[in-house]
Each structure stands twice: as structure tokens, then as C-alpha cells.
Length: 68
Image 1 (cartoon, rainbow, N blue to C red):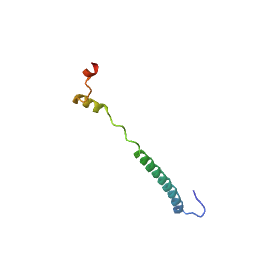
Image 2: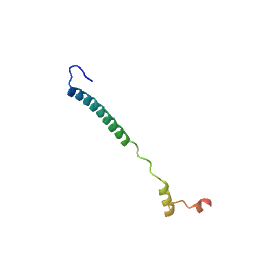
Image 3: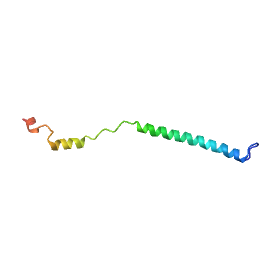
Image 4: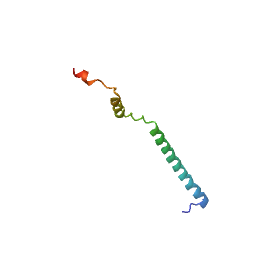
């Protein structure tokens, strides 16, 4: 591709600038998506295991008294 008034070096510089701009935009979008993922709410804790250990430890209601 020959463009009047431009040398091969000038053409390579133009192509590199376009690639550099595209790469910059892609990196900025990737950083934004990564930061948005970091601001998510934490997952709720699992209560099933806590209830299991509380039951084994005796932190439950006395079922015999409830039935009387």
C-alpha cells in the first residue's frame, strides 16, 4: 500500500499508533471490569455447620420440656 507523500516508516508509525490506542482501550476496559468484580457484596456465611456444632455442644432447646 503506497500512500503519496508517506514513507514506509511513516505508515508503520500510523499503524502502530492505531494498535496502541486499541490496546490502551482494551486494557482500560479490562481494569474497569476487574474493579467492578472486586466491589461485589461478600457471600453470606454458611450457617449449617454452625448449627451442627451448636447442636452437638448442647446449645439447643430442651425438646422434652417443650412437649410437656
